[in-house]
Image 1 (cartoon, rainbow, N blue to C red):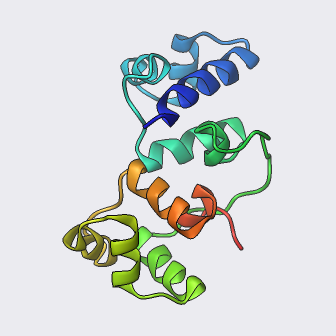
Image 2 (cartoon, helix red, strand yellow):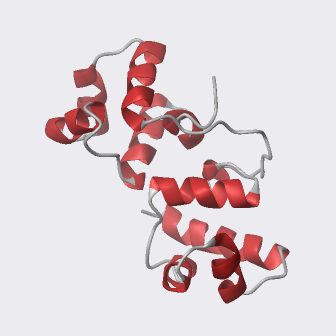
Length: 147
């Protein structure tokens, strides 16, 4: 999870660019101050939903927030579809099977099928695994960016 320090630093920079402190940012973004504090101290990573909220707030990609992209792209992003629908899209887009994905990513089979059934959403760590496996952006994996 080497990205956690990059995330903390980038978030701190983005807050500073808005000439805000952590408390003002927490209030303005409607994120609990304790969560913001933990993000800034690299003690906690956001959920995928929270990461998207932050990226929307700052007008950047989720990949930029995590330090996987150097440029702060301000492209228009889509609303993320339910992850089970996006997973079906990824399978078709990359022309692969379920087993190819969960084995290739090292994701437990039962967890993967829970995602497909819409019973769970993946953790940020698993979304990153999927992005690395498919050699694409996190925004593409979650359906925020189109091909």
